[in-house]
Image 1 (cartoon, one colour):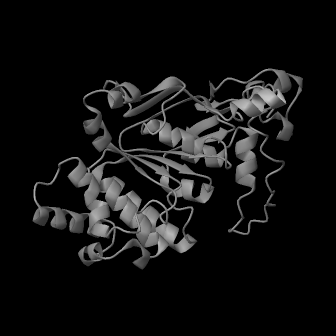
Image 2 (cartoon, helix red, strand yellow):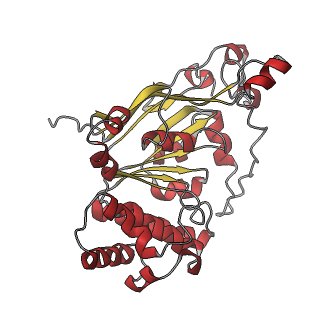
Image 3 (tube, helix red, strand yellow):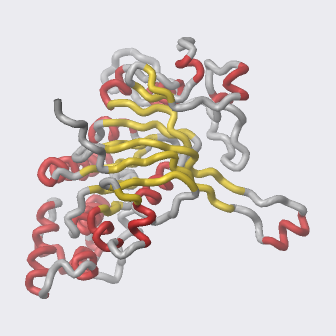
Length: 334
């Protein structure tokens, strides 16, 4: 038997707390304590080489914070991120930080904000190449930028233009070309299509899937759009208020969602096949993260909540091949 392949990315009990207190003098005058938000609260998952894990959930559930923790833009409060067996936080503080940064890149949500409006596309895409010293001379630099632009469906001539001369979808392609410049193995995509029209979303997603096939890329894909997730992912993790509540293979999650929150998200998707299934809007509001509910944080919105759910926080358990954090599922009530 073959030995199991070690995952490329492994996240263990990852947590990030932000201090959102008022200034010191205000707190003294108003006699208020410090306030903290647990943006990410004990998240664990792994991603195999060449695969895509999608994280979904409503706004404010901690998805983007996880993305930034993985590439080292934030330092974790607790837990750790391992990339190819090495601790990311320690590696980025050490002498091999540049080598690690080349291997992992990020595509940001807003293509209008993530590109410098004063730079030509040539300078934008060439920046990682010059920063890492990957291309020795200017002629080679231009031809490499041209290749990168062509790999995402643009032309080499586009390098002489400025970002404002492109549509949103084309700008996001430029962002992808920039991320691919260092030939990374792992891309963190923070809602890369949410600012785009639906038809353009499909084009950008198809480009990303083609690149994954050709270059063997590994993706962490952040999204709140389940239709997009269904198109790109191999595994899906559902987040709620900083915690993973369900983690399963895509086919299993869409066919048989376990956690009540996952069911609620899936029930809200419009029924394009006209099967007569009622579309149920998502019930209730996301609680204030400064004062999260006791026990299971989903219990105020959950139709299956009982007394145990209000006081005891459920652990992420493996139940029939699916990891799910729900007392009702564990007890067989749903």
